[in-house]
Length: 364
Image (cartoon, rainbow, N blue to C red; front, side, top):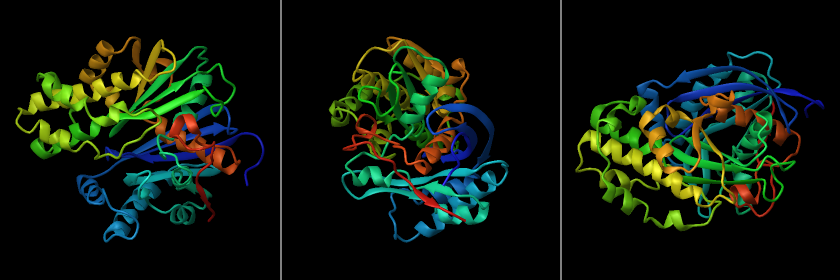
């Protein structure tokens, strides 16, 4: 479907934190990252955020799902329509429910609708094929993280940490030739990251987030809550493994009796502790943990990670990458891999039985 050689791809991502839609261009041949292009961001209004949040937990065919899908499609069309020069689009959609091994995974929004609006082929529904083959369907950025490690010239194992609504880690050994080679990648969700903090400040203070970790910085973590949190069976499961945004919803109840500041500090400490717990599964130690996603702006979260990890902790900007756009760039890259028939996940990243390329391709 695509010409041989390099392709300008446009990717979009709307995470469970519901900040807005990130969009970014990547020049790639499906293996290497050759160049990063323009980026754009469209924030959700409070009303849009509320309407989409109302769809969390809903599945295909449930009442209200179509309205959420239309909201997601309109927001994506608005930002993706700002770009010129793309040959293909990667559209992740908005995750509403994720239950691998059960009902599957559900990302709202139709790639066919966007293909018609944009006049471009759109790759979407990236996760279903992986889940149907026994995988977790998440995380899906690891193959892109592997390409990023090659792009920055890494020569030893390192890890990427995405702090979105849920946290996820990718351990990468760039000495391998390809991401789907045994031992090249290990990836898994660590636990809740920004989601419970965002939910806390939204419910108590009417805010979107704890900006910069200011609220958490004014409080003291409740160590007993964090210790009980780390006793959850999830942390003792071997990776690959994944979570739904609300799998740890009880954490908010655990901090209900704390002050706003102490509750925020406790949720932040729990997120950082979950990452450190996850790092125990790394096949080999890493010298550097590169952090992407909105959580890297939380100074308290980053300080806690630096205290807990046995390696350097730095935002991905330290190596010239864009932490606000890495996931959008990932789905641009993955769209090209899907179009070229290359795998997008493997046993080490999602637990799928064999390397698989997910995604539907819709043409205008």
